[in-house]
View (spheres, rainbow, N blue to C red):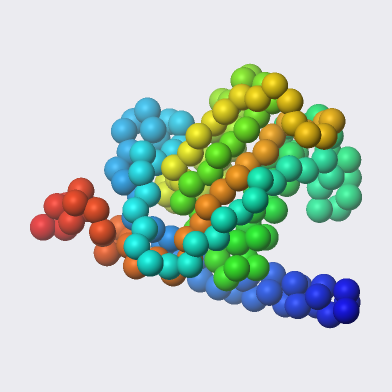
Length: 170
């Protein structure tokens, strides 16, 4: 049974590679500050399939290498895990509309923002909260990200649902 489940997961992941990255939602216009911090003030969705991604952490990367206490490696791994969950659901990282990011040290904040710009290169940044915490449930964890994605939403830049977006189309 385990091999069957692994095969299905592999097929879903492979299928996700070929799915077109559709616009997940309508991302509201950003101020220069919001652009510099790589987040949207609001993301509008209407319809679509909502995927609630559990908080993701990592002390090992996809190759099994120990990444305990390594903020950058953990951030890349956690984002990869979020993308994998979204692909299993039929979407991708591009479908993330909001994320709550917990970091162990405030000094990681600016680095996380720079990394997030690389993960969401189209400028459709999720709504986001960046929170510093005292510690995590397991030793060696530096970051945890919880996210929500929307797949197949009817709102987009081309088909706005917000008053702001509809006014721009006139």
